[in-house]
Image (cartoon, rainbow, N blue to C red; front, side, top):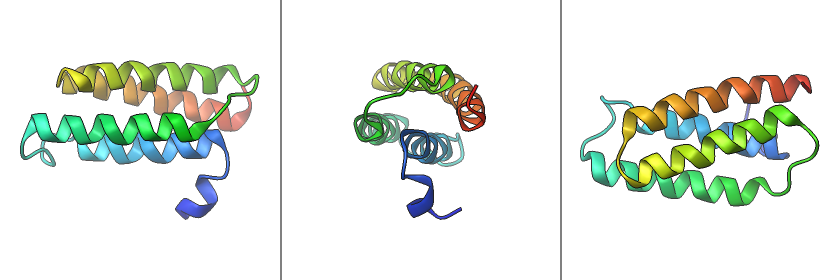
Amino acid sequence: MSSAVSTRNPTGVLELAVEQVLASVRPAALGDPVVGARRAEESLRDALRDAGPVDDNIALQHALACAEAACEHLKYVEIQEARTLLTAARGQLVLAHEGV
């Protein structure tokens, strides 16, 4: 799926950001963990702002909460905790696509 297609709605915006941040904070991808965590946090916060208002999709609300919590962990370079929350967000985004 192209990014132009996937970013037309809040779910797509967040989904793309979560996937990109998860890839960027893999242990093999992190040269300097502090710099990597800061960049990942900034990218995720931008996506959260771009996601805009959330409708009544509970799964999307949960995904946003997980992503926001992941930002806080990235702020303190708690990479593993952030990855766990981003993985949870990804699962909620799957449910959000299904309208759960």
